[in-house]
Amino acid sequence: MFELKSYSRKELALLYFPDSPTAKAACMNFRRWMLGKTDSKVLFNELRHKKLFLKPDVKRIVELLGEP
Image 1: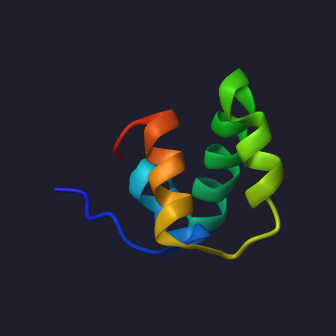
Image 2: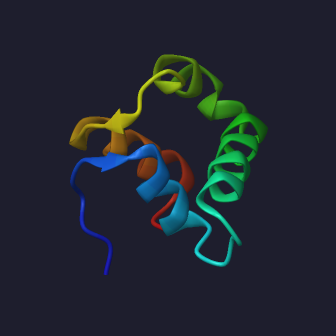
Image 3: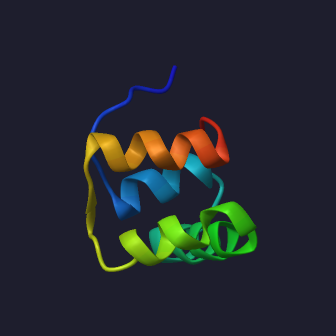
């Protein structure tokens, strides 16, 4: 079960893409997926330089993308 809390970018990307061969690949896939969602482009621009997503950030991401 997914726990709503603060996550690093890498941790959250690995939750959404657990089968990625590396954490870097998971981050790249996560980035591409967020950019592909038209509703998430504003959110992506707000969060793109953050290395740590706080609980409210994670909540907004989950609302747009669904639970990992």
